[in-house]
Image (cartoon, rainbow, N blue to C red):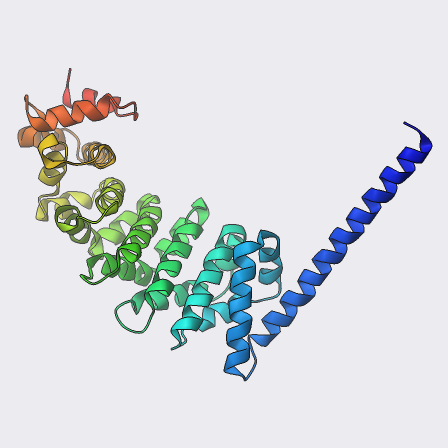
Length: 319
């Protein structure tokens, strides 16, 4: 390569770096200005800044850490206590967008989980449906990090509120699905499962399985059931709602369950068996998985689906 060509390449790289640095500085100044407006005495100024921050976090991933660094999160958390649905929506959506890139900043912000809990706990009254959904989705996003699961799980009011969302007859389908995903994330930490059972998760989940016909909700509910089944407290809770029998019935082709629902039912039965041993296996067999029943046919379908359910055959001695 000629010296002249190398010179031009070097100069172009410098220009690109300078432009990139300049662009980042412009973003940083813009964000600082917007975050500063969140403390304005003017409600309209605060609303406009919040709306702009929401758009930025949605469309510009590079700006999310800058927004966190500008100390926007405490203002966003405080806004979840607002009476304005528009402000709630923008704040919750912005927190959700930040949770994609700035989980550490969120979890380390004092009062953030309490603010999300407030938004979720008022789903029947003062919190808008959109803010509830974004708040539940943000909780789920935080739960992607293993170390955060016990932290979120220690907030019993969050668990209680999520359970109440899936119990409420008027909850929109999106709210139910987001709450179920958050509960699933919480249940991934074994020590959280007992709290979920204590706070009424099992009857709420099985009520969805038995009564809810909305697309995807039964699949999501049984996914949570499968996780919750993996603890000692599940035995009594499942007995009260005839849970084992419901799970066995889901495997029968006559029920019309989807393959995903059947896979979740199998996973739940396996987890029950692991926690309760031979007693659980005998009970499951007696309820229809020990002979040539429709449930056995459904179990074989799952075992043949390549979903790592071969253990079911060993547990129940299926051929």
